[in-house]
Structure formats: structure tokens, C-alpha cells
Amino acid sequence: MDFKNISVLLEKYKNILPGDGVVKDALISVLSIFGIELKKENIKISRGLVYINCDFTTKSKIFVNKIEIMRSLREVLGKKTPVDII
Figure 1: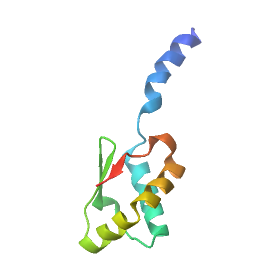
Figure 2: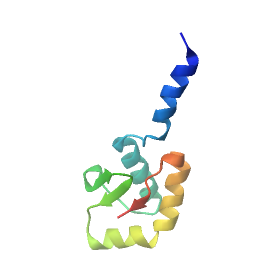
Figure 3: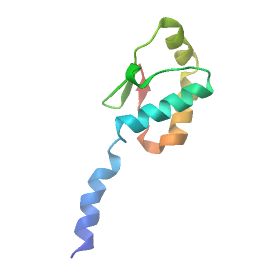
Figure 4: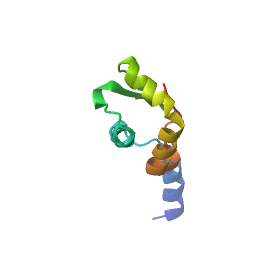
């Protein structure tokens, strides 16, 4: 068995984003730190972007704290953090 070929194969999968559930759980945890409650069904993840479906007040709180939220998400998820929250 050639381990060199296996490492080349695994290298392709290094940059895959974590599953939606992992990102949603991390986002919900981070948002709770900021006093923002959100349910999983209100979060959609597509192509590295997080889409939030909620009332205007909650969305405003998220965008006011967006830089800190993204920083906290990076601490939890590392390089595989979504690019933006919309």
C-alpha cells in the first residue's frame, strides 16, 4: 500500500467546509454569547455564505456585531469558517 497516494487523495478533502449542522451549531452558540437567540431552521448555508431568516431586530443585532461574531466563529471553526453572514 502506497501511503503517498493516500495523502494526495486526502489533501483534496482538506478544504471542504464542515457540515451544515456543525456550522449552524457553532453560529447558534456564538450568537448566544451576544444575547441573540436563533433556531437552526432560520439558518441556511450555501457556498460558504450564511443566510439568516429572522425578524429585522434580530438581524440588526447580528449585523451590528458581525465582525465580532465572525471572529468568534473563526476561533471555533478555524479556516473552514463561512466567508460572510447575509
